[in-house]
Image (cartoon, rainbow, N blue to C red; front, side):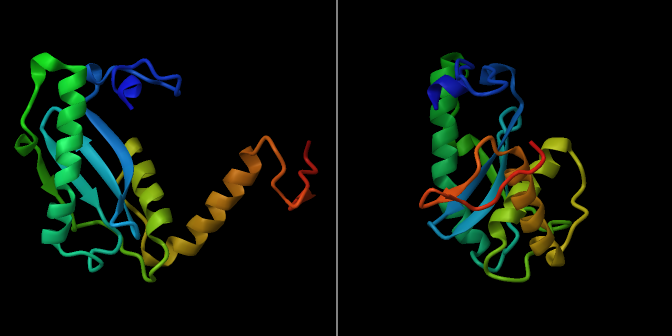
Length: 164
């Protein structure tokens, strides 16, 4: 993780966080719920985008986000010791207006990925609760289309890519 923060990771487009204003990442809440996180490093604001806000109260999310505040502060302190900030300097928000909600108990993962896609592109969310299933189909299609290997179970291919 440190190599990523200081821009020495072998991952695509790795840059030092000194030149980054915001980071986007998926996060798991208590092992059973996914949310999208946008951390504005300049403004010291952590926004938690939650497609199922009734799963956890605002107070529960704020308590859970304490670890995010500490983690980000620690990573920034390591990467930029001259700019160290106290974890309490980060505020946590859970925007609700304009944030689409899922209609079942199982779409938080695909909604989280969609949130991150839209946040990255700086687009307004223009999808809704009925889009979970289409997102799953789109994601599965993209995974299979971009797969370099044919997925197998017990050495039997699950599908054959006839286009190659």
